[in-house]
Structure formats: C-alpha cells, structure tokens
Amino acid sequence: GEDVEQSLFLSVREGDSSVINCTYTDSSSTYLYWYKQEPGAGLQLLTYIFSNMDMKQDQRLTVLLNKKDKHLSLRIADTQTGDSAIYFCADANRDDKIIFGKGTRLHILP
Amino acid sequence: DGGITQSPKYLFRKEGQNVTLSCEQNLNHDAMYWYRQDPGQGLRLIYYSQIVNDFQKGDIAEGYSVSREKKESFPLTVTSAQKNPTAFYLCASIDRGSEAFFGQGTRLTVV
Image 1 (cartoon, rainbow over the protein chains, first blue to last red):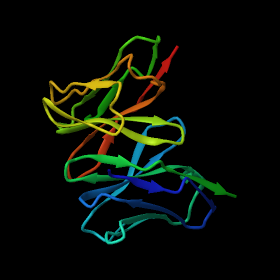
Image 2 (image 1 turned 60 degrees about the vertical axis):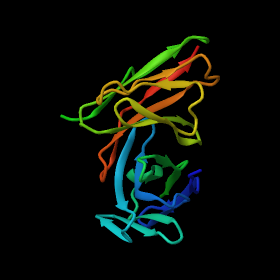
Image 3 (image 1 turned 30 degrees about the vertical axis):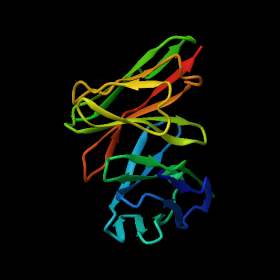
Image 4 (image 1 turned 180 degrees about the vertical axis):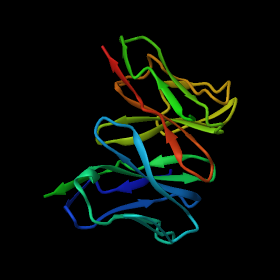
C-alpha cells in the first residue's frame, strides 16, 4: 500500500537552514503537504505543492519535489526557536486518500 | 467563520463501551477524514469519505465505524472491539486542490 517516510529527528543550530526530507510510494499523488504540530496543538498547514510542480517558495519555506524519485523536501531558512515542532509530510492521491508520515521532530540548538 | 469542529476535546470511556466522536465542518468540503495519532506513530488513517453516504476504510479501520449521512458531519464510533483506543483523534476535511483543514482533536482515554 501507500507509504510516506520521514526521518524522526533533526537538530539544527539557530540561524542555520533546516532541511526535512520525505519519500513516498504512491504513483498517483496529486498533492503533497507539509504540516507543523507544536506540543499539545493541532496541525497547522505550512505549505503544499501540486505533483506537477518542482518547487514552491513561500517566505522562509522552500519545497522541492523530485517526482521521479518520489522525494519531497522542506527547507526552512534562518531557523528560529519558534520553528521547534514536529513536521509532517502528507501525500494525497487522486482518490482523495491522504497518508501522513510519522513526523520529523525539529530541535533547535542555541 | 468557516471551520471544522471536533467535540468533545477530552473523552473518557470505560472498557467495553462504545463512544462516538463528533466532527462537523461548514466549509462545504466533500471529503472528510479521521486519523488517530499515537506518540511516535504520526497520523494513521482510520476512515475517509469522499461523498455523502459513502466511505472507505483506511489503514487501521478495525474496531471503528463511521457514517456520512450529511455533508457537514462525519462522526466516528470507537467500538468495544478496538483493543487499544486511548489516543488523540483528528478529523480533517479537504477542498480538492487546496489544504486539508484539521479540527483541534479529541483525546480519548480508556479508564
């Protein structure tokens, strides 16, 4: 079946860029999402990209999609302490089924 | 304001009881979803519905049931057959071509 995989942890020094990676298996993906979850809170959409796009930029966020390798990445420029959270990658296919990865916990070092 | 509302925020269930979690949206979205979140497990899809009176099983549907009698509502029943129901449950709806909107979640605890 469909699967979405992410590394579980990432530590980045404050002010550096964070790159969170995600791979997916679904060949019928239509959209790919990045969500952020802070402790005790719900999910906040950060950005999403259509599967026919290669890149999307939104302020400090850059999403890169390599459809051939089924690889998605989220780059956060100038990482701040407020970026500390769990980041989820999600894949939506043409049947509207949305599968999430297990999440990457981003830890900011001073 | 449009949005998606889950209730209650906290729910306690005795072993052997069925409980129903509510999810309502006024966004006019066709597709709605239920996810379960456990620590270190991310979000796992329980059920989803693309249209009224139709729904599909997700990856962990056993022990759960849903209905979709109205476009706005997608309640989830956690039955006594679900052996480990303590978790955080999230409901979502989607505007195709845009984001999936999430409710604030229901934390279910078996006592």
